[in-house]
Every structure is written in structure tokens, then in C-alpha cells.
Image (cartoon, rainbow, N blue to C red; front, side):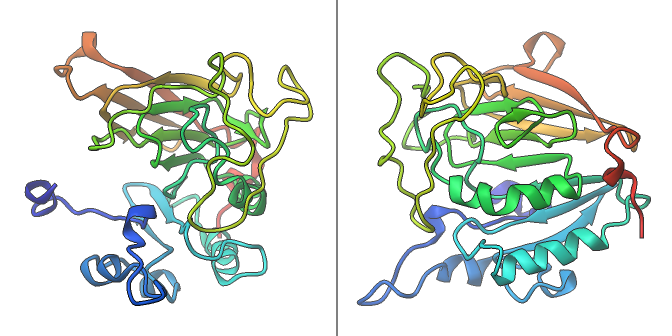
Length: 274
């Protein structure tokens, strides 16, 4: 990454590998992350580098911390609520959020690991019409249909797991819906936060911890290393393209591609300006 980072502006957010507990009791964490990366925390009215926001190219980006307090009574939630209220949809029609650990994930690896964070924050993102969510953590690619609370919803965000840039731990292959691959509810304990694993209460997976086929909210998934590009066309359309690392660029070598369409008339919160 060093040659790329030396000439291309980058914004980062902490993940589990950045925790790096230090000291005799492991109480010192994220020392390298805090020292090495400059982020616009103060400019976005945040008092910490663990969550912040910025504008770029018609998009308001919100970077959230999955390894610091995300409860509704905490500072991060309060900051997020204020930040979302300040978004001017005339200046930045698109709102994109990002954090390390995915909420929607059909792979066995890290399955429902950050369910607690989803239960605390998903309603706020939905209320303010967040358009797209990017996460990593799972070493594979997956794009979700628009979803809210595990139910297809045309006003929900498009969640994309793009944790497949390459890792010595290799690519994640098993899906939670593969025969014999459903994790136990006690598995996949997060390094931070509690355990809120749940059985589904409706739909084809009602009463189960895992689906028995690819979930309806999972639109496309592939166990390949790759990278993605988001191109904002205008205030209504954005083009998302995912490339496998081993493929050459060209129309015949696209791993996944979709136009993401905002619907300000149907999802009125998205058309609000300040």
C-alpha cells in the first residue's frame, strides 16, 4: 500500500488488527493507528480519530468505529446523530457510511459478530437515508440488496463487504448456509462489545440461526480477492464495480457491477437539505 498511499489521498478507519493491546494489562490500544493516520476529526466536530466524516465528490462519508462505544447512550451515537442532521443533500446528495465489521454477512466467518452494533445504530442510519455502507473484516466479497432489519426494503442502504483486498489469512470460503457450516450462536465473539446473536423471527429462516440457502438480502457473493470502484454519475445514479485482482480491466472481466439508484421521492428523508 505504501506506493499508493504516497500519492493518493486515503481515509481510514480502525479495525480489529489495529487494537494492538499494549502494557502489562493490555489497556493501551490503537497506539499505532492514532499516531500514523491524520483524519478530519476536529473538522467534523468529532473529538476522536475513531469516528469522523468528510465530503468528497458529491458524497458525505461517515466513518464509524466498531471497536469503541456504539451504544445509543454513548458519545459516538450522539455525534452520528448530529452529523446526519447536518448533511445538506443539495451539496452532497449521497451519504456513504463505512466501518470495519459488516452487519449483513452470509459467510460463516464473523457471522453475526457485530449484531449488537447493528441493533444499536441501524435505525438511525435508515432514518436519515444512508445510501451505501462499506465494510471489510470478512476476507471475501458480498453485495447486499437494500435491506433493513433483515427485511428487503427499497429505502434501506446497499451494504457491501469489500474485505477482499488480500490477506495472509487467505480468503474466506464457507457460507453460513452451506451444509454443516452454520456457526454455533456462541461462536464469532467480537473483540469489542457484547454478543447479541439472534434467530430469525420471520421469512424462510424463521426460528433458525442460519439460512439454509443464500439469504434473500444477499445479492451476490464470491470468495475472491479483489477491489471496488464507486463512480458517482449524478445525484440519482452511482456505478459500483467490483474487479477480481486476477482479472484484466475490460467489460468482459467485471466481477460484479450495479447501478445504485437513489429514490428521493419514495424515500423522502434522502431529499432533505439544511
